[in-house]
Length: 130
Ligand SMILES: [Zn+2]
Ligand SMILES: [Zn+2]
Image (cartoon, rainbow, N blue to C red):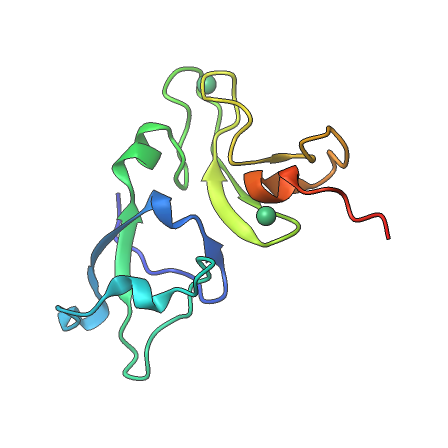
């Protein structure tokens, strides 16, 4: 897996990320997680232009949930999904081989609004009918 930097303003599923190092190689000792807001939104490089670098976590790679990844069992391709409500984003393989529903899946928990992606937290909320 190649080393990468993240996209500022994107809300990542941080459990799928593994910290590797730093741009410029001089960030040793910094906390890579202060570059995220509490909800997982990546805040971008600091005032010195330095930022942490990453790979996809080993368990995400094992599931094929990374760019260009595929389910190791059936070959279903991973896709980048963004929750339409909160913006949480992740690479998702959605096939029968993995526990269902996936962390970001079509529709709400009650089966409505299957036109849109919802993360597990937002899917469980009541639809806003006001
Ligand atoms: Zn599969
Ligand atoms: Zn959400």
